[in-house]
Length: 285
Image 1 (cartoon, one colour):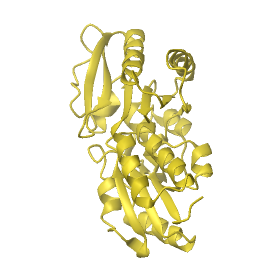
Image 2 (cartoon, rainbow, N blue to C red):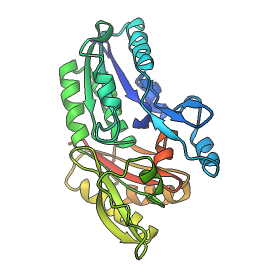
Image 3 (spheres, helix red, strand yellow):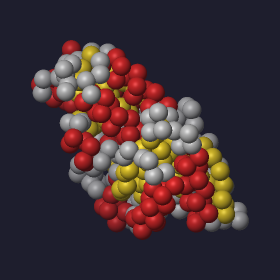
Image 4 (cartoon, one colour):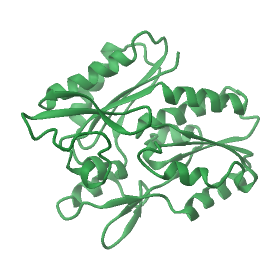
């Protein structure tokens, strides 16, 4: 049921799985991955395994979607018969994508538009787009969908661990995380987004296994007292570890509504490198 003809727009770094993009007819604006000899649309012209395979030759950079790409998506939404758009976008503290989409105004192509700055990254942002789909399907008024998605975004936490801080540092996405961590006593940071949507160190643990267990414990603690919640374990070429952690997370938080596991999008691979594990929860009530 979508009486108000509301479309959902997401950026590619919100990492919404294909299954949910299809179920809720989401429109995706891809970020750009830049190599010396070519540019690629995130998740369209290039896949995660392509980025991993080329790391030994070159670490690419990323950039915002082009304004023309965003304009094309709005035109497509209008042509498909929608009247309103809820745009769910990764943190403005990590990317200019939110400001770019918002710059098109409250009514691009005559579409009433609500832009949500999730202040999160990856599926930590994508969960809110999925929530928008659920609420639209229930027939809630557009204003109420926007309000509840904003609220869901504020109750989403993603804790992640990287094998090395090299990629975050090279991409300028280190935020408030100390670049010296990991070089002394094998200390590994557990990273999250703060209230401003900027990376910061939540905890430190000695060695990878302890850092992953710490991230899991933080996710479990974040869900404490919640009656409804979604859970996730995402990875960057670390499926075996992700499978094990998701099984543990399900055992610790058995009353989840949605559980998502998968490989992160190519643009996120660029900034985190191989070995990323992200463990998260979204509280719904």
